[in-house]
Amino acid sequence: MHSADTIPPPRLATTPGRITRALLRWMMRPARVAAVEALSPRFRLIDLEGECLKNVVWQPGQKIQVAIGAGLSSRTYTPMSWDADAGRTRMLAYLHGDGTGSRWAGSLLAGQVCQFLGPRRSLDLSGADGPVILFGDETSFGLAAALRNDPAATELVFEVSDAAESRAVLTAIGLDRATVIERRDGGVHLAAIGADLSRHVTPNARFVLTGKAQSIQSVSQALKKSGMGSSSVKSKAYWSPGKTGLD
Image 1 (tube, rainbow, N blue to C red):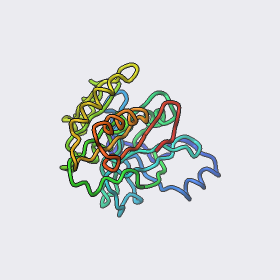
Image 2 (spheres, one colour):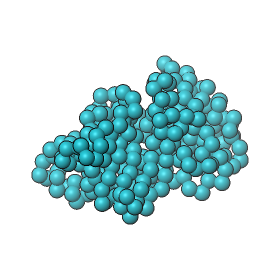
Image 3 (cartoon, rainbow, N blue to C red):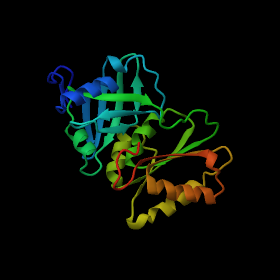
Image 4 (tube, rainbow, N blue to C red):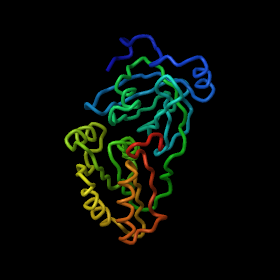
């Protein structure tokens, strides 16, 4: 990670064409990459800063879309925090496979300039009058970090590919109390997760299900069998095998 006085002059991470540049200026706003920290081989902590980030009304659970590559492709991130006075936001990128988004985040350097859209509504988590239980995976760590100061967010449960790596990252971002369960072939671990989450079913509990679409479906079915009404469950699929751009 470069400090502010040693980074090179700002430059674009890629070189989009003239028409693409015009569309990006019209649709999105610029932000400078203030810092990039590798928390582990597959996680990058990214700080963005700029005038366009100032005087912004942001709520935990909202998303931003960041342009990547030379075209109009973008990836969605849930900011962990937002300082509207300083014009700075922080997000956590998970390098999931060898896709365009992973390559972009893995090669990102302080001093580069990116284009973003948002913040925009993604998950409305306001108004909870009871405990909030969050289920997700590595792509949900940013959302969990945004909620870490919310006293209602009492339970965090994640399915992950590498428990040791995920625990280290969660500790680094202040979420060492989270429960981490490694994935198993055929999704057999999801039955245990569904049973565990069903213990928290109460009349005023609220569940937030995020991450992989198929895992959300499995956990949602378990909660339904335990008597949890659909109005008390909010879900947002961040990814699904073979698909991009879900959120």
